Amino acid sequence: MNLKSLSENKIAQATVTIALFSLLAKILGIVRDVVFSHEFATSDLMGAYFAAFRIPDFIYNLLILGTFSVVFIPVYSEYLLKDKKQADHLASSIINTTILIMLVISIIAFIFVDQLVSAIVPGFSGEAYELTKLFTKVFLLSPIFMTLSSIVSSMLNTHKSFMPVAIAPVVYNLSIILGALILYPAMGPVGIALGVVAGAILMFAIQLPRLWQLGFNYQFAIESSQGFVKFWKLYWPRIFSLGTEQVSALIVTIFGSFIGTAALAGFYYANNLQSVFLGIIAISFAIAVFPILSDLYNKKENDGFKDVLAKTTIQILYFIVPLSTLLLVLRAQVVRLVYGSFEGTNFTFEDTRAVAQAVGLFCISLFAQALIPLFTRAFYAMQNTIIPVIIGLITIVSNILLSAYLIPKFGLIGMALSFSITSVINLIILILELHRKIGSFHDEYLIVNSLKIIISSLLSGAGAFVALYLVAPVVDLSTYFGVLSQAFFAALVAVSIYLGVSWILNMTETKELVKLLRTTGSKIGKPINIIFNWWS
Image (cartoon, rainbow, N blue to C red; front, top):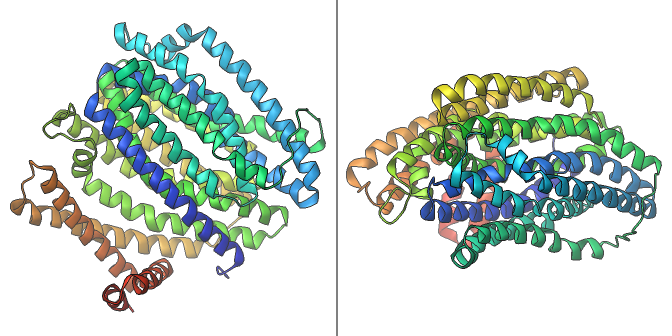
């Protein structure tokens, strides 16, 4: 198959842009969690903070995140190919309707906040409950501005303008950090909440200039055109399919509230850590490839659709499998370095051990979590909403059963294990249904290259494991620098082994990566270039 195409080049360029800013956003996200863990550890305030996101996140993520973009982009893209003026009319009508719906739902949620918080965290009481309610009330302002941000992002993505979209999360995390460092000392817990809301407003505002530059003509009107009707017909089933992810988060929170705020905070600390890899790799690829898949499907280029899907699958696995293997080996070191169990922090050794165990269980399903966004978007690029709905219902039932059994029995470990097993189940069903829908998308290519990635990753993980014990006797593991040195050496060994083995196994991705590194090396200086020349 011909995998070298214009579409692939566009995907690569877009992915690099998104990944770089996603990396910056994730770094700031880690800084945010470092601030939280250093100041609040797994206290009632942090448990309440994480729990309070469930209601506004459920509203926003259910109605907008993922739902909006995967339905809006194919329809909007179709209209842009025909007539930009009609596309502007369509976008304006959808914007106005969506914001109206979001306003009504947010107001209703605010009115019934007591009942909603009691349902989400039935195990909370006293200060933990009151803090959760306070945070929730303020957080309910966020979905309105996050909705506006997401709509503008979808429009910019359709125009293949990824830069402003990629910058937005950076601003969001920076605002939360400033809220914790500046507003909290002056205003107390509400200061943290206001930092979140300010971040949502800035996410929307920073993207507007580029949208106007593209010539978008907004109209304060709702026109029931054919595209408008088509959008909503595709939209509502998608809510039920994406709702599975939000219901899963709610299920974990509900069961987790009975085992305490510490376990709930620990779960989200671990989840935030693993999401760094998902955001940089999986989401970057999925966002970049979705408009391409939509265009290929609209143009009835079925072979091109399969080529792009297969190539992107391997590219995601090429990065996520070795990273998850390395994170599994270095989980304790990474948690200590990020959240800290050193002098001067409220994050204890017991907190570190619990979060590290959860991170280890998340690593098992990182490959599944990384591919789910891509395969889900493949269905929606084909404007198919029924199959994801059915898969979503199966996933919800699986998660309820697993959570009901595992969380009361194993606590935080049960929360992470339930999440991971559910993710793998979701991926397996997606793959089976995708094959049933479009047939084989270069299965031999996928199997052969996946095996190469697995072999390379296992050997690199083994190398990292050995390196940990070789370094341990010569560094002081009670200090930050000692743990950092141990982790750095192990990671260096793992990366070297992975690149070496995958090069021997003739992986295209490794050769392309080394070529990129050689080019970079030649720009930085001859000594570095000599190192990279050794590979070829």
